[in-house]
Image (cartoon, rainbow, N blue to C red; front, side):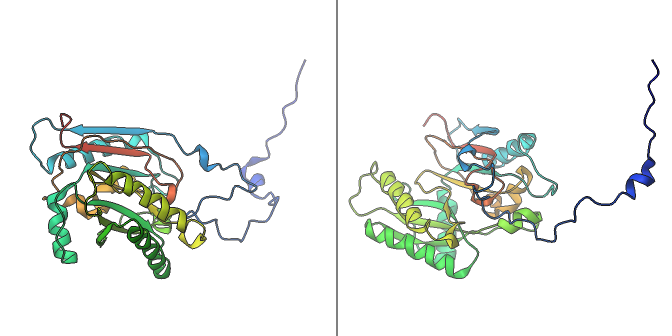
Length: 287
């Protein structure tokens, strides 16, 4: 049986075929927000995978900046566990969790805010994401400070986080938040074991008060505790060190961290909360 092959139309003929539908003139959807669940297969509840985690620890008992640099080296070597889209300079999330850099923060807070920090363990610090609009930033801070006062906690201050976004791609820049470090002290007489619970209540209550206004969608508390701090964003692993200027300071010595725990999500937005690839550096596992 002989079968006749269809004749090839040739590249020229294919190129000359009319378009089946007109190209859309609408602007592309913004990547600074979660997609709508209406008419979409997107489900925020599915954002729970953890694709790359590493830990660096020291048993010598000597604070140093080297352990932070080693954590960054490990993070970069996990780049294959992350991903990027057609824009290679916009990653799907990376970050570093370290012990509290008490000595560094004391110098920074004194120089930038003109204040003295309480002893280590008697203050909490954490990086917070804000919307870019000045009015929304002020509203978020006011709500947070109101809850701080309601719980009898002390506001040490807000420290604008120094960053360098010159290496970020267009997608990351579009959703990049305004970031500041919050420093809080406990109510007088608070037991050390009770302070973390008060910080948890603060995060939950302040976030609940702000979530009803769409203008505050980019508000998010990355971490807020007495022993660790998280630097993260919609970055590639190679961008973390250059983006966060704090990490580059040679006096960024980390202090003991008893535990290092985390969770990760995957959506391609700063507000996706936590990074796809995460390096954890801790001062001593024997603490």
